[in-house]
Image 1 (cartoon, helix red, strand yellow):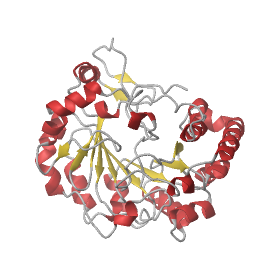
Image 2 (cartoon, rainbow, N blue to C red):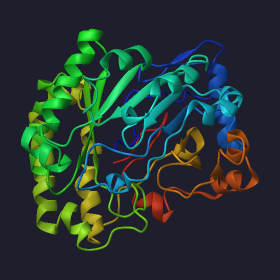
Image 3 (tube, rainbow, N blue to C red):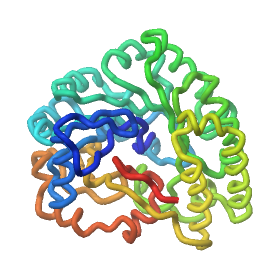
Image 4 (cartoon, helix red, strand yellow):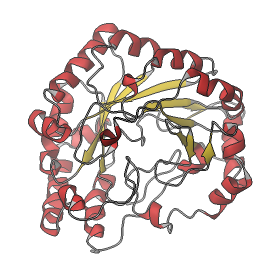
Length: 375
């Protein structure tokens, strides 16, 4: 599965916005009215706009990744249908949704994803992002380029490393073929990638960047593996020895920190051009995260506004403020806007301090629209 610190998302603008749209640092235009809505959300903790909705469109996955347990529930197939979401379309309009991210599992395993997309296209000025393992992109290239505005794939390493982590034969080659098929349908079609760094691939970091260039990706970003939450189909947080399978030991943390510095120097042009999405100082946070797992220093400071600018709707209808916090309600029981702006949901956001909350402090997948992450 791919998580959603997505690249190319809109960000907020300064409080002295004029009536004209403002161009953000990411190149997106945010109207003055939308800026005011976001400011009202932050001051009241009631959602006046919802820039991003993550739909876990399908629960199954076609990979067996070592750092994720979603595939272990493949026998239980759940998905969100057009009929599930249709009653909530007015609420999505009311919340001024700007981007819908299709995730899972693997969204392309959905029984009729394009019928679901046709409903989402009824939302004005809403873009659709597909998160994918890449294995089915070649099969559905025509449909993907017709219905989705961009694709973000998961890449775990150069060919052999990627295949080993995904535990799928020819996973890397199928990913590359899928990207080529998208570009054959639409030259210049935007495809970026996210890479989860962990014990099995951290040494491959330079090769991952080279591989991303080789298969034609537009951009790549990096995050550390999550070992402390109940996300990704974990009934309880992992314990040893599962954590040790993917987390770095102390010696590896030092090795990783040195490798990050070498990568920053060697790939300076890629950082400058934005091919590597993170700033160098943000990449340096990753070894610090693994060190903190051993109690060697604090976790890097978390800056995240996901509960104020996004929501996650799971395949069973559960609505979460982000991937890692408990559900607020279920769309099969209540309208989405009622769930998100219920007194308990407003109280949750008002009381949440992401710099102190234990879940947030150890989070690997933050979303900060309009905010810069400190080093």
